[in-house]
Length: 324
Image 1 (tube, one colour):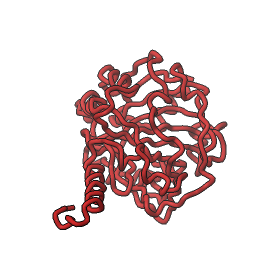
Image 2 (image 1 turned 45 degrees about the vertical axis):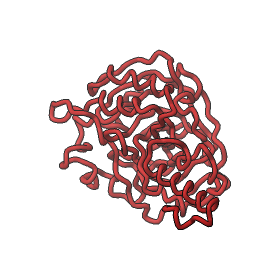
Image 3 (image 1 turned 90 degrees about the vertical axis):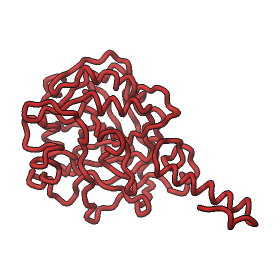
Image 4 (image 1 turned 135 degrees about the vertical axis):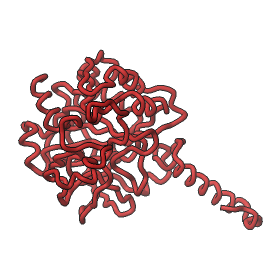
C-alpha cells in the first residue's frame, strides 16, 4: 500500500514548491490555472451550491460505509505542500448514495483560510471556515484510470464550522498533531486515536448535494462525482486556529503560513445540482446550519429574524414598536 499511495499523492496533490501552480503568488494563483490542462473546462469544481434551485432526487439514498469506524485504517498524516493529508489504509470503502458502484477511500485533506471563510464549496453564497474532502476511486481502478472517466473519482465534501458549545472532538486530536508536520514534506505515523466516523461525528450523512465536477487542484481532471453534505462538522475554535497557525508552504525556499488554500467557485455552466432530501423536511431541524448555535453572522441574522417575527405575532397590537 505504501508505494502505491505515494504514487497517488504525487499524481493527485502536487507539491506547491515543485509545481507550476500555487495559491498565494499572483503569478501561479487560482486565477492563472486556466492554462493548466483541464482547469478551463466546463464542469469545474468547486461551485456555489444554489440551495433554492437544487433538485430533489429520490434515488440519492443512504450510503453504506465500510471500516469508516476503524481507527487503525488512518495510517499517517503528511504536509504535502499545499494542504495536510491523511493516508487511508486498505479496506475502507463506500457504496450506495446513488453511486454506480462501490468506491475505495484513498486519503482525506482540508482547505481553509485565515480562520473565517476557507471552504471551497459554498451554500447559496455562504463560505464556511474550512472544508474536508475524502477522496475515493472507483473499485477496480487505479488513479490513472479513474481520472479518465467521468465518474472515476468520488469525493465526499464536509463543511467545518465553529461552535462555542463544542468543547472537544476527534478533530481536536487530529489538530494537535499538526505542529509535528509543519514543514512541507514531513510525515507522521498515526496511533489509532481517531477514525473517519469519529471525525464526522454529528453530521447527518443522509442529507447531501450531488453534482458532476472536477478535482479542485491542477490538473483539474473532470472525473469527480461530488457529494457535499448539508450539515457541517462542528469543532471548537481552537481546531481552526491550529490549522491556520501550525502549517507552512515552502515557496521560493521560504516557509510561509499555509492559509487561503482554496479555489474560488467555478461556473455551473448549466449543470444541475441534485439533493437527497426535501428542503421542507429540514426547515425546522436543529442540526441544520441555519439554526445551530454557531458564530456565523448569517445564522445570527436569521435567528434574529425568527425572533422578530415571533414578537410580531405575539404582540400584534404593539407591532409598530417592534423593529426588524
